[in-house]
Amino acid sequence: MKITTAEVIVTCPGRNYVTLKITTDEGLTGLGDATLNGRELAVASYLRDHVCPLLIGRDPQRIEDMWQYLYRGAYWRRGPVTMTAISAVDVALWDIKGKAAGLPLYQLLGGASREAVTLYAHADGRDVPELLDRVAELVEDGFQAIRVQVAVPGLDKTYGVSGGPPGTFYEPADGRIPAEQRWETGAYLDFAPTMFEAVRERYGFDLHLLHDVHNRLTPVEAARLGRSLESFRLWWMEDPTPAEDQAAFGLIRQHTVTPIAVGEVFNSIWDCRDLITNRLIDYIRTSVTHAGGITHLRRIFDLAHLYGVRSGSHGAGDLSPVSLGAALHVDLAIPNFGIQEYMGHAPGWDDVFHASYWREGGYMHPGEDPGIGVTLDEEAAGRFPYDPKSLPVCRLRDGTMHDW
Ligand code: CS2
Ligand code: MG
Image 1 (spheres, protein in one colour):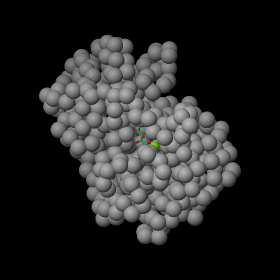
Image 2 (cartoon, rainbow, N blue to C red):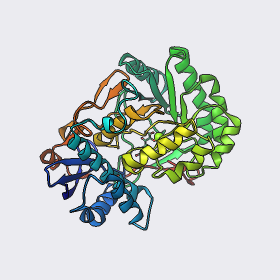
Image 3 (tube, protein in one colour):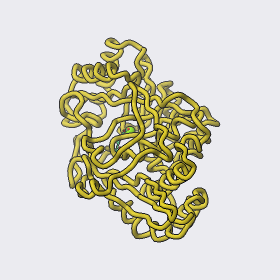
Image 4 (cartoon, rainbow, N blue to C red):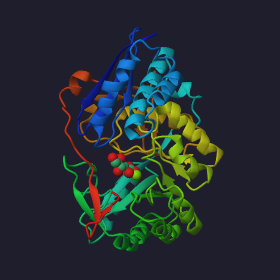
């Protein structure tokens, strides 16, 4: 079998997505998500200009060799753009392999290790009452794990809060030029326990609560937050501090038993090795789209398994339906699955993408279609041109650049 074409499809049905489509001489096609929020065209160019020409004529069955070829052969290895491009090729080849075998991808990954994939949904509010209303809607919809985020009084914008009525889809990349948001750590640290107290008072401890700090704290502030939230028994506190400073998590660990999840910005096993092998985190959030595809993600999860760390893959709306489909197959098969983020996608996604995955309450299943089970309507994709958007930036009140 040989690759005959490799095309990059950039489309914007509700938001921007970049998709790689690989076609073989036997008529099989495979899709891979190559979306990097706010940097979509960088990956599209890396693929179109530097990778796709190398794929033509190669055997799509040689997935591992292709991964090594693109990783080692780049010389300039690792990084979000390179690894998102490699991820897209890898996922597309696994999609082809599933289709060639006539099997849903999870069957090629060892078969199902569980009946379905447990999800966590997002709830946010402009104030605590609104947050509680949104949590109620999600509980009614069958979710048992919910990420909670609420506007911090006195801050004009807070990460994870749409600013609209409960249920408004949260899309942070909202302008060509990055929106400038202000942050005040003290106000956040003082208010966060209030939010959890209200949710626990209303829902007790049957509901798993997650929270995304989104890189905003110093290590000792993160330690303080984790300790202040211990009585609320979170499922996890995510990205408490910028993840590249892996050693900082040792300090956090010394002060709190609130579980920690990190990794959505990681793009290789090297980024997470020390966190995992020193048991500094409880969940690794690497995604199939940004961490080297299925081939590399399985290595990360296998390493994590050795140290009692579970998966908690990133699944925000800026990872495409192709990404979600591939993630569900991996989630279904691995032994140390923890939980899968499920935000859904901006209204309009299904004008272009069609998926065999299905959701029942707080669970999802990738479906039984051969391969990943997600298709892309290229004619429809052409009707939604790329719409340049940037993620916000964050500054402290005095204007100092901070982490968004
Ligand atoms: C967030 C992401 O879902 C999450 O955990 O951290 O939504 C993140 O803000 C976006 O993916 C950035 O594009
Ligand atoms: Mg996050």
